Image 1 (cartoon, rainbow, N blue to C red):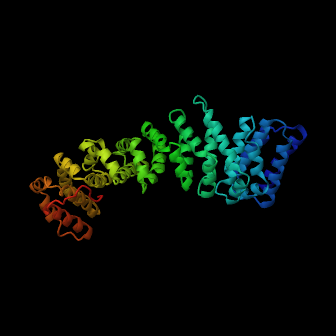
Image 2 (cartoon, helix red, strand yellow):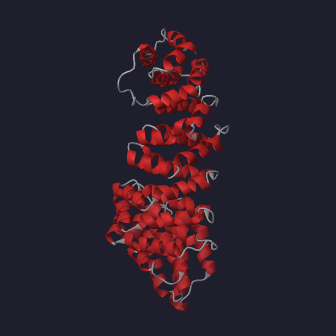
Image 3 (cartoon, rainbow, N blue to C red):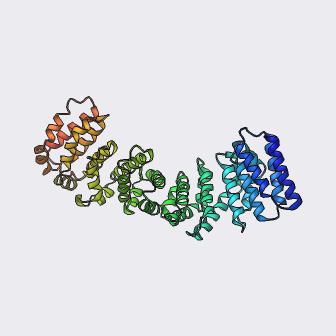
Length: 450
């Protein structure tokens, strides 16, 4: 295998040296051999091939033939054993020199080469950092963003975003370098422009954005560049694109964890309405892992967003908000995750007397009490029961609600749970009983999250 491959590269080189060109059949023979190889190439063969390929690039007179050299290099670099030797041979710097070329095919394959050489390769990434490669690639992103044409196939855009993704994955230092070089707004621009025209590009750009946000300055750049609104636009308009909505949720979900400012920004941009659409589109398809993930992530994000007082107040809308209605409906969804999410969300809405009174007027307490017998049959029923009584405890605090809850069987429901073996359940049940019997405090406007 090594000898045959070496012969093929020698033939490729000799033709380039003697005639200044690359014969397509010779290139295809190399591709066929590389794709069929089952054994790791030895070190001597790799070094000889890379040296021959470097000379072939020098001898090729036509820029289209130079593109073929980088195409071959990109294919070679798919093999783990070749990547470090590509770096040692100086191929990172060589490929970067071609990113400003007017011939797009040579730029395309040079980018592919860089991405493949540096994929999961610390040596390659260090070489790229040392050569200021992130700046070169970011400038290419800028050019592509500014000249985007939805009528074209935009393969260059896909490859460039993919290159950023390969380079930034699990490498915070390189991700920070890309952000500092201004890559984030251009990735967001390509995302926004390709939502309808090129779903493959849109998904690749979102994946790259997600990686850049692993570093602290990535999140800052994302916010400053209008990232929340752009990704939510994609989620709203293409929530039925399963792969894209999966990626969008994967990117947006960490933003709502422990960042109240981001929660507000997302709510202002219409995040919860988009999340409701995602949940609705996934109902009844929970056997599919992607649908299950999207449904659970979207509902969890809603529950988390509601832990912020301003977000909760904005979404409540005097009890008429779509999120309130949907969360109440989740109790009857027969989906285990939505059932518990619904109870938690309603508990989060019940953090002011005004809200609690409105919720009881709408009969939400009855929905919770009616769900209790179903919850008892669920595996790990204590989780459901705990969520139910967490919400009921809040609803029981305002004075006008107490006789209504007592009349509708809330105390009996509490008494039926006193034999529970779960200390968490007993804590919530006893808390609900105390709330039913306690006189209202002077300031009961804010309660704990469910």
